[in-house]
Length: 77
Image 1 (cartoon, helix red, strand yellow):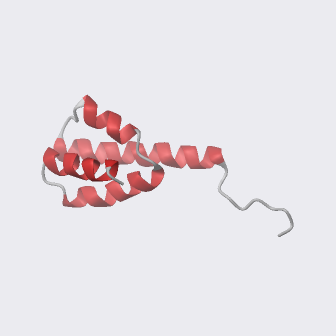
Image 2 (cartoon, helix red, strand yellow):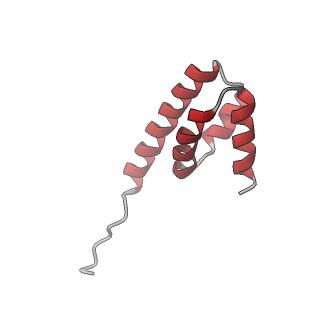
């Protein structure tokens, strides 16, 4: 309609993704302590949608094993 592109601009989406990743990492660090490099790498590779899901899921985490299990579930999708 009218040739308008109503999709979110890529630059805006990139900023939103980076802010979400930063927030989730801070929350995980506060909850679980320092994260191993292997887990950090996995989190760095998550999409915005996965980061948002992780932000909700971490509310139920009580151990590093919970995070590891959640990340393993993401790799199967």
